[in-house]
Length: 84
Image 1 (cartoon, rainbow, N blue to C red):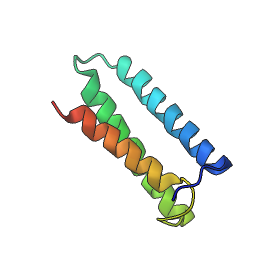
Image 2 (image 1 turned 30 degrees about the vertical axis):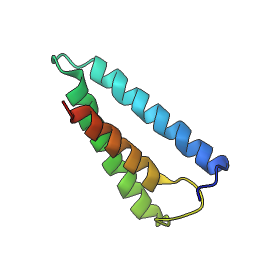
Image 3 (image 1 turned 45 degrees about the horizontal axis):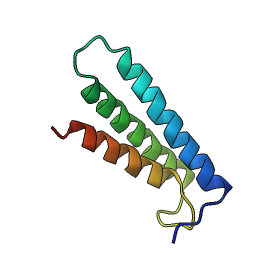
Image 4 (image 1 turned 90 degrees about the vertical axis):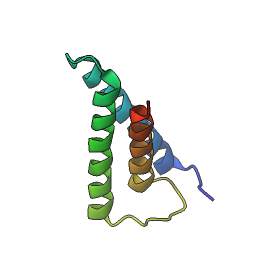
């Protein structure tokens, strides 16, 4: 069971902020397809979250949300944006 504590709330805020930044950068992209650019930015942010989770040695299954969950959410959002 995932417990929402202050660290979990911070993780959700980081996830929202990273997604909004990727949307803002994709909106500035001069190309025609914003969804593909947003998906690639989400995949890049997910890989950054994975590297951070490995560097901090966060437990894969913990009681609260951490960088592993954030990476999974960003990868899932990126995958959904690529589905046509």
